[in-house]
Image 1 (cartoon, helix red, strand yellow):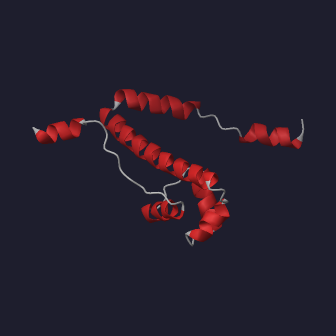
Image 2: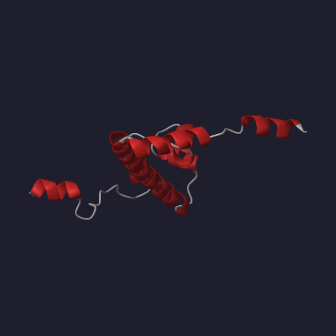
Image 3: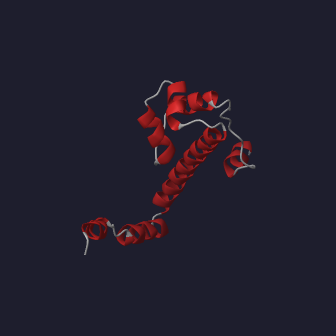
Length: 120
């Protein structure tokens, strides 16, 4: 077996235990499931914004380094933000949107349960 094949084989992680434990906790613990769902929604929202900013960057023909210079950030930090899971500062997201001639806006969801309860 080659050194590369050995290295790949030894670094592959078994996520089965984590997945089974998560599924069990989601099924058995209502409070955990509610918080997990809330956190998942937040992460998905951030990822969606970052993906859209990266699409705009590509459409404008800018490199990640060029975008970083436009917002006075380290190119490595912008590259990481656009290619890996991250939780960027809102100020950085707004600066990137501004540099890409875009706005960050909130769009209300359809009438939510929370607003319906508040109106009662």
